[in-house]
Structure formats: structure tokens, C-alpha cells
Length: 195
Length: 98
Image (cartoon, rainbow over all chains, first blue to last red):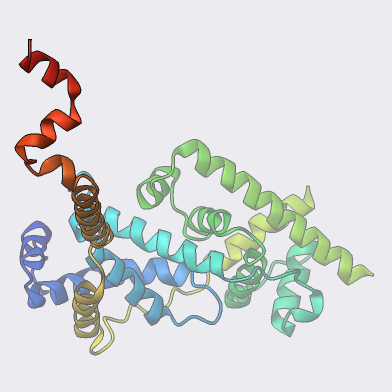
């Protein structure tokens, strides 16, 4: 038998009254949600635990601003997304991805994808994930977020709206722009390989 | 067309990558976050702090201006001697002596 679900509104009341146990319960309850967002948008050279800690500190610092208009988890998601975007903004974008930057497996996967002659082995999924991560480092944090949620996490536009608070048109425009950049990046990599 | 498919193929393959293990909260993480948030709250200046600082400055400045104003206009504010009025305003003399 699992633990009973946390009564979030009651817990928030206790946190606002300065109850440390309730604050710890809230962190434990929200950790899976926060760490998922953090892992999907983690900048280079930053530990996921440090970024998750930043997110929670912001949540507690801004708790008085939460009015209960949206579910608390959605509000926390938006705080997490904003924190990650700010961290990604602070990080310099990768200037350009070269074929020489790729590991052997990544190069094989990319070759297979670009030529379309062989179907990549599912075991090479991790390499593909790494490769996508490297390509996405050339995108703006906002474009990167949208394409991660849409194309890698299979989220719907409505779900992304809930997580980010952005409107549907903005999400679609960003997705279009991000995919175009990804395709251009892949085409350039292919060109470099040939030369 | 093939190039356009390349991104979709790569993304589809990347989606198959196993998600990181859903491990729970690291040991001591919740306690550390709660302790840090309390420290931040105690050390963080209140949004009214700047306003308070400005108000105290303004109060001190207002006090100095009031004192300066009193000093400059001291003569006008203090009741003068009986003869001073006639010297200050000859019109009053005219009214007093028809």
C-alpha cells in the first residue's frame, strides 16, 4: 500500500504558517515533477540537483504570489521552466557542431539517419539522444524547450501551454522555427562530412 | 524531402532512449532546501526596505529644511516690541493718528 496523496492546499497553508515538516513534505511531493523538467532542460556544466534546488528556493520565495488560479503543480512547472530558461540563457550557445565533435556511435547514427539507407538500431537511441542534445544547444532556450516537449517528450500543444503559460500560436511558431534550425543543422553537418 | 525526414527520424530514435531512473528525493535534499529557503527569507531585504530607507532620508531632510526655514524667518515669527510695528509699517501710524 502506497503513501496517501498529499493534500496540497492544506500543506500550503501549513507552509505559509512556517511549518518546516510541511515544507519538506511539499519538496518530496514536487521533486519528481521538478527533476523531470530540470533533466529535460539542463544546461551544460550544471548539476541537476543544484538547478532543482534553485527551483525550490524560488517556489518558496514566491509562495505568497500563488493565488490558486491554476493547480499548484502547474504553477511550480512554470517556475521550473523559467528557472531553466534563465540558466540556459546565461550559458553561451555552442558555436557550431562539427562532425569531429561526434563520438563513433553518434556519427554512425547520424549517417544512418541522413542517408536513410539503413534503419538505426534501437540500441543506438541513447546516442541519438546525445546527438539531439548537442544540436539543440544551438537553439534559443525557448525554442529548445518547445522542441524538447513536443518532439522528444511527445507532449501536446495544450500540455505545453499548461507547463509554460505560452499561447498556442507562440508554441507553434517556436516549434516551426526550432525544427527548421534542426533540419538546417543536420544538412550542414552532412555537407561538412562530404567535404 | 529526405533531409526534412532526417530530423523526424532522429527525434523518433531519441524518444526511444530510456528515461533516467525515477529515483526519489536525494538524501537530505528536502531538509537542505527548507533550511536554505528560511535563511534566504531572513537575509533577503523586504520589498519595502528601499522605501523605508527613502522615507527616513526624506524625514531627516524635511526636518533640516524646517529648521532652516525657522532660522531664516525667526524675526517675522517672534512677537516684536511695541515700537517695531510703527517702524515696520508707516501705514499703521497714519491710521492711528487721524
